[in-house]
Structures are given as C-alpha cells and as structure tokens.
Image (cartoon, protein in one colour):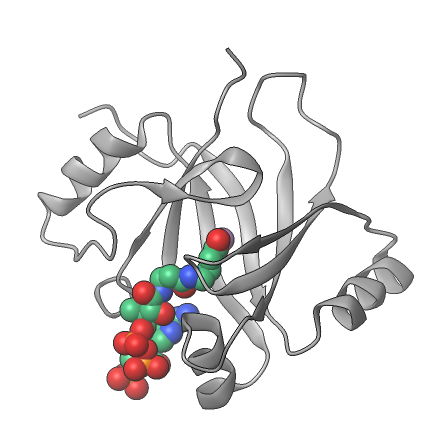
Amino acid sequence: MVLPLLTRIDHVGIACRELDHTVELYRTTFGLEAVSFEVNEEQGVREAMLRVGAAAPPGLPGAGYVQLLEPLRPDTPVGKFLARRGEGIHHIGYGVADISQALSDIGGTGIRLLDERPRHGSMGASIAFLHPADLGGVLTELVQFVTAQ
Ligand code: CMX
Ligand code: CO
C-alpha cells in the first residue's frame, strides 16, 4: 500500500435545488466560472464544475473545483439529501493515484465501499464513493484524473 492514499483535494460537492441560479451566485459572489456542465444519468445529477485557482498543467491533475449538483429526480442521492437536509455540502472528492488499488486497500480496512468498481465521473475522471456512516458522517469520493493518452 502506498500511503497516503489521498493525494489532494479534488472537489467539494454541493447540493443545490437550482443549478443555474447557484452557478450565477458563485459567479457574482466569488468570480468563479463554470468550466464544465454535464448530466450524469448514473449518478442522477446535472452538475457544474467551477475551477478554484490556477488550471493544472495540460494532462496533469492538480486543480481544485467546486462541484455544484442538482438532482435529476427526487429518488437520487442528491434528491434524497435535499429532501432530508436541504442545500449544503454533500461530499468531498479526493484525488488518488490508482483508484482500483485505493478501493482494494480501503475495502481491506473494513470501510464500506459504495462502489466496488470505479464509475464515470466529471470531466472524464474515474470515481468511487465510500460510505459516510463509516467516515464520521462525511460522504467521501475518490477521484482518479484521467490522463490524455
Ligand atoms: N453525507 C453524509 N451522510 C449522508 C449523505 C451525505 N451526502 N447522504 C445520506 N446520508 C446519510 C443520511 O443522513 C442517513 O443517515 P441516518 O440514517 O443517520 O439518518 C443515511 O445516510 C441514509 O440516508 P438516505 O437518505 O436513506 O440515503 P441512502 O442510504 O439511500 O443513500 C448514500 C446514502 C450515501 C449511500 C447515497 O447517497 C450514495 O450512494 N451516494 C453516492 C453517490 C452520490 O452521492 N452521487 C451523487 C454525486 C455524483 C458526483 O459527485 O459525481
Ligand atoms: Co463529486
């Protein structure tokens, strides 16, 4: 196992009811611009990524983001979260060098994996979630940046 498994903070995921309104709030308040808008059917979200700080050098991970998340339907993770808790911080996404290895290592510690295998995430990344109940109430996402071949 190569420690630490987490190499950087990739993004803070924030649940919101109206994506366009919240993107505009972050633009007018902080001057942050959305660098990507995507619909991820599998995750049940429409989302925007707002880069904080300088862009990473081409082909390399490094930039940090705010990920604004609007649910596609009420019966999705973000839809249920909004109904239960209202708008706010939904999860933290950390960079990992090798997501399959990280899942195997973390799974071996007894922390529950919500994804046994990586899934498709924002901007081409591979992602996987860890159960918040095993991590002090924090839904935790692993993110492996996909390098251009
Ligand atoms: N952070 C912390 N706790 C959370 C949570 C969150 N984001 N979402 C739910 N919970 C807690 C609830 O508060 C509740 O706790 P208690 O039982 O102590 O009250 C418990 O989890 C169950 O809540 P639930 O509404 O019944 O939710 P589910 O069990 O159906 O699902 C979870 C919870 C974390 C397993 C589910 O949201 C999940 O699989 N998430 C991973 C996928 C995801 O979030 N995708 C959207 C983001 C996509 C992206 O970032 O690209
Ligand atoms: Co995320």
